[in-house]
Amino acid sequence: MKYLRRIVMLAMATFVLGTAAAAAQGMPSPPVGVWGCVVNSAPVTIELQMEVAPNQSLFGRGTIVYNGTSAIYQVQGQGDWSALPPDQFVPHWNFKFRMFPSNHAIFSWFAGPTDSPNHLYNFFTNPQTGDQVETACQRIG
Image 1 (cartoon, rainbow, N blue to C red):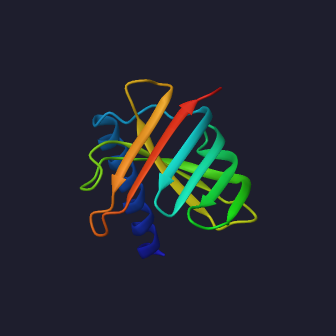
Image 2: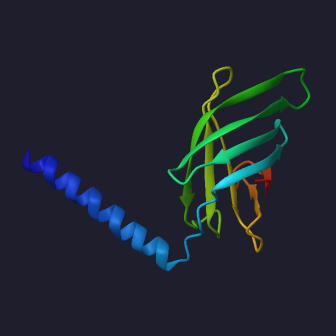
Image 3: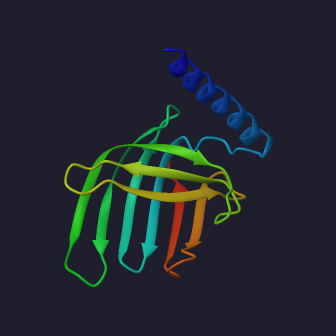
């Protein structure tokens, strides 16, 4: 019991310190609202609309196209989002959005704040494979 209490206290301290550090680094405002997003990569293109809530939940619907195949999925479902601080691969804040559709595997996409509060953007190159993913979102409500 004592060990469990220490783990909980350590986790709480890590969360509090992490939150304070994030705030000091300019954590962006939550992306609350309705957004239209397009995610492009070599294997897949995703177009979707999502409603992002302040409690880190979302509801999305859209289309996933597997490029070079006839596989097209119309998806919708609940999801969640979180803010990710800069790291060694991405030098700016990003939001991670994740959706749990009933007819497709869970998937995630990433987009970060821009100079405009109505746009999110991310361009990522995998340092190991060179694969690239570009995501652009626009607030539509």
